[in-house]
Image (cartoon, rainbow, N blue to C red; front, side, top):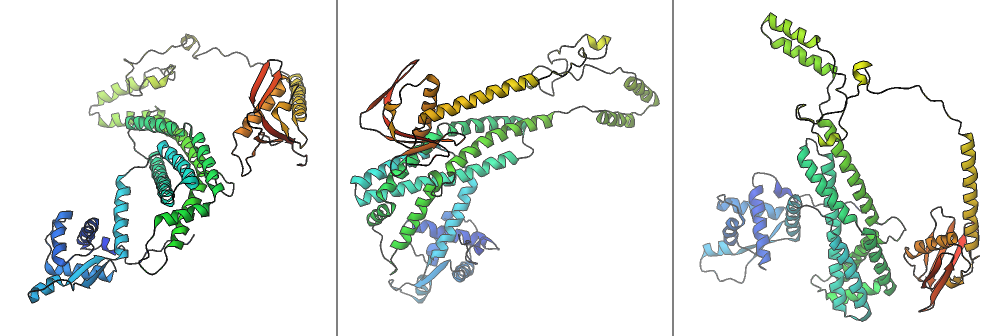
Length: 505
């Protein structure tokens, strides 16, 4: 990707003594464009400055000089007005010149407006946007099948709008979340409330996000079976783009649509097989929940003023410096160094979170103190260290058990292996309950995977040793499997199971 290059004079109006006047002029032009007025005279412009909130006095020369400076920066353009009737030379001078924003000026004003919008807005993770993307994909597949070109364009435009909203809100929310995690000097009570609300918000968003992502990925595959290029060509005809500059806008428009579709795939179904960004978003959300709880614990620990001998002696030295009389100093010495240590002060409540660190001892609930503190000076009875037991027999027994379990598992996989042949689910007979559970595990993994272009679902076990390929069986066919614990009935599928090391058929 090429680096973004901004014209050097595009945002120079934001600095200098007249930056407020420059911004007011651009805002006046922007509001005029909202009313489909593209050109303003000097008198029109002066009358609109107050409407946009510019309250300073503007001299004739300052406004003309500002417009000239903005013309040199290629923000405004000036043309002569040949459609007016001028009665005097002064009228000609005041109304002859009309000013309008250039394309660079429109871009500069839009950039400033967008920047201010970002400063005052907050990001969000909205499951409704994911649902809207899935719904628009379903509508798009329907329109490609039987709709008009205009409807294809309209639905595609709505889909891209929802995708852009998802991207912008996610980036902004993630930035705010990271700033919250790095915040210093946060009030503990406020952070408690923010933490609880943020964790609940993230948990609500992460709930069922896997299902939504799978639905969107499946519908993307359905649309690609129609042909993405064919879809964009139909949308181009429905867009009815005008040709105003002599250059055909279709190539650039199609290139932009292709980039937007690649962005959609990067979020839910990457071409290169990498992790979708929706999965990365789920991981970021889960890490944020853990980090928020860790930050809260760290803040709580930092607010606890742990007592130490160094801090006590420093405080005692400060007291010695403020006492005026020698008798008071001797009394303080006797009081400080004549005390016996509080050997039970290290004990804590069963749930320290229920007692604030600032609560006085007089109002705090009591702590159980062992009678051994008075007699022996320790809180619990310490017995002799026990001898280290011999665990060699236990290790041998566990090794034999693990080998037997591995052999049993390998035997189950070998019996389920179809040898590269395709069988129907109904052909698996004489299954014990353990083998039936292995088969159900493989079926669940395959049904949870997205089908490829041929409609085959593929999956592997966690260790990657067994692979299953699953495709639809005969319409309406029902498989019935009998096990020692009952009978299983369900749709029949064509299944091929193979273990690693065997060659595909």
